[in-house]
Image (tube, rainbow, N blue to C red; front, side, top):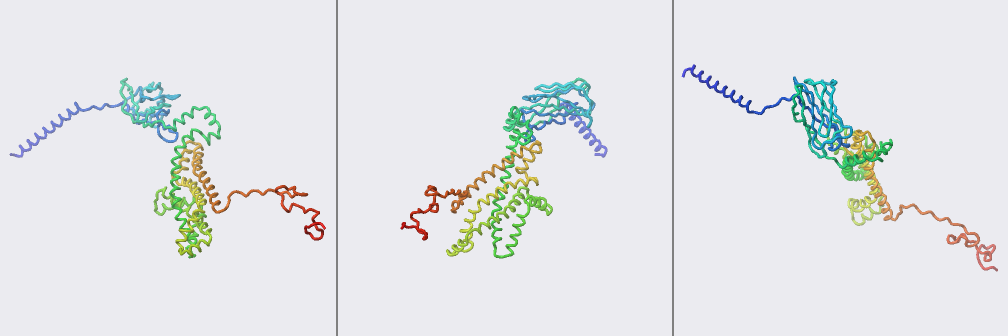
Amino acid sequence: MSLKKKYSAVASVLRSFLALVAVLSLVVCVTGPRTQAHALTVDKTTAQPNQSDGNQIIGGIPTRITWEATVGDDEEIQAISLVFPAGTTLGEGANTKATVLDGLARLETPQENTITNEGTVIEFAEPVSSGLLIRVEIFYVALPAESGHYTLTGSYVNGEGTETELEESPAIAVISVTVVESITQWLDEQPWVEWWNSQLFLRVFFNPQLIVASVPTLFQGWLRSLGLVLVGFPLAIPIGLAVSFLRMARFRLVRFFASIYVNVIRGTPLFLQIYIAFFGLPFLGVSIDSYLLGILVLAMNSSAYLAEIFRAGIQSIHKGQFEASASLGMNAVQTMFSVILPQTVRRDIPTATSEFILLYKDTSLLAAVGVMEQMMFAKSMVASSGNMTPYIVAAGYYLLVTLPLTKIIANFEKKLAAAEGHSSDPPAKKKKRRRARGGVEGGEDATLDSFSPPQDNFRPGTGTLGPKV
């Protein structure tokens, strides 16, 4: 076959292939789905959070919905109709406002707005030109009470008077009404709450609605604070016991280093120790989880105090206990762990419990370095509400632990004193005795010293009693 014929055959195949592609493209264009160009493109649909202690949107409670759309090229918009989800209700003072923006500039756009439970309609006096942003704000509208994702539907009318359905808008996530919100709504309707909040002091420190909202939120912080101390304090006990042994060691160098540890920890504020740990360790390239680092700092601080508590308790045991144990053939280790420490623990329980209370309260210092514990939760609520009530609720959570423990310590000390033959009750006042005059005037309280001897039995000059001669 000649070269010319080969080129002719290739060209024929190529023309056939191009013709086939053209036919297929025409078929796809005729039979395929058609996309309708919208004169109005929906950009976003959002709702303002209406949760008193969070940033979620609760159904059944009035909020503000913001809907934004951009006018397409070579298009104009005369009216917009938005349809609310089924179950939407309007609060008192519900209204609609449409703003036309050219970049950041607001344009004066006369309009007529109507709103019902079904939806809202915005009619512009002059058509909105292409490229402009239309922002519709709907105030005091309550989305359906059931949780779910809701969208706004509707239609618009372009400059030619043609009505077209709106494209699907972004969904708004809604949660159900919580028990806290239900109680808060009930409080809002009570006359006594209105009077209560009209008093400045009561409103700032004891706002009923904020008390209800703070209790479940601060409960999470309370559990975290308890977790910090319940892990940190048991960790401090063996460290403190070991340091107390070093403080009583025979070697002076060991006692010296143990004394430095105890004196430095007890002589500096816990707040400063927290700052050094949280901001100093990153300079060394050490990265530790904030909760774990907080536990370690609390444990190290408490161990220094527990070391002195244990040392004082051990040294308070009479030396006869050591001698008696030695006479029974017990070595020093057996004596310490079988005889001395059980007695020491019993005596140190009240003081150690007091240290537990102090450590629990000191967990609030971790809020200064961003650890989310009870105080940090309260601080966040105060910042968002501008009210001091969350701090009062936080104080109640602290007292929920400290007051019962204080009572338990007092009762334990009484039992311990009674077991050792002492009484923690104040001594009773002695009754005043009256000196008898002329006989038994003192009654039952009279003593022998209050009686004067009968004159007929007294021997002058002898100072003794006897028969009269």
